[in-house]
Image (cartoon, rainbow, N blue to C red; front, side, top):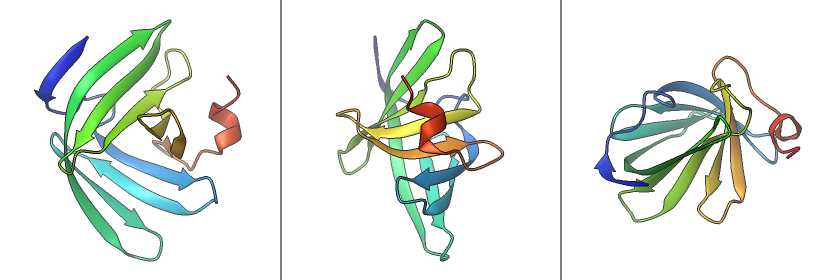
Length: 113
């Protein structure tokens, strides 16, 4: 089902360690309607967003978020009953970043499905 313009879920709110496919590391912090991405080089970018959907299937969670500029992404937790490691992907499903609550996560840990 779809939720129109809702605040971000408590499941992904908070601080994350993110890594892209090239191994570049960043810190991401989600609050209710904004998130901040800070690279290891020190650049910081802020984005407004709203949660526009949620899907839970076989204990696997996927949240759709829409940025203020219109881009749509998904924050997914592909490990059943585990919301401490996830993936941020494009609407098409292409994984951009892995995220971990306490550590950087290799793509191979989450993309074996």
